[in-house]
Amino acid sequence: MNSKDEILQRLRAHTRETYDMPNLDFETITYDDPVAQFIETTTTIAGAHLIEAKPSDDLNELVHKAYPNASIIASNIEGINAQLNPDTVKKAQDLDHTDVGVIRGEVACAENGCVWIPQTMKERAMCFSAEYLVILVSKANIVSNMHQAYERINFPEVDMPDGKHSDYGFGTFISGPSKTADIEQALVYGAQAARGVTVILTD
Image 1 (cartoon, rainbow, N blue to C red):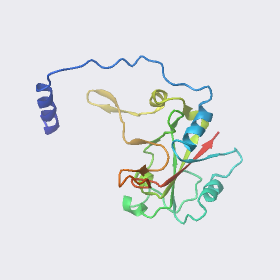
Image 2 (cartoon, rainbow, N blue to C red; image 1 turned 180 degrees about the vertical axis):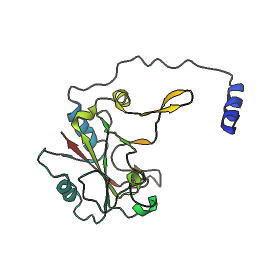
Image 3 (tube, helix red, strand yellow; image 1 turned 60 degrees about the vertical axis):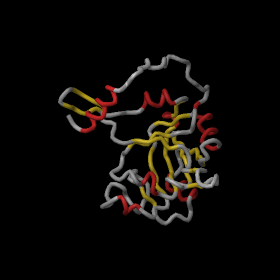
């Protein structure tokens, strides 16, 4: 028995009351137009900028227009002009001083403006160390609520001795820029991650 199992066993032995799992069979929030709701939530509550890309738009031009003073762009997305690639850097610290990180979101939620970012890069630090983030997400991948979002998240399965299990790896929901008001009740942007986020919606 390892230390983790030992700790859990002790906790179970000293549990005095147990409770049934809550009933999750309830009506969730849905929207007639999840895309329109996502745009509204993202640009108001989440505090991000949003660009609706046309099929003819050049994504590099949209990124440059959003951040014209960016010197160092990091991305591993094919077709994005980047000075750094999170797949080929030697260590996460090499991504320091990144002006803009360009990443792809897998699922977006209209309810709260969150976008699910799976780890599709070697160094996930780029998602948090870049001064600004650009998130590319398809309109087809926007859902109404978090229940639907979790149903759409793709967790690849891996073979284990006792059968197949989901390989969760790493992933995170990002909703707008990082901000906190814990310090002296002053609102600070970029305390834990990017201080600005732009979401580019693609068809």
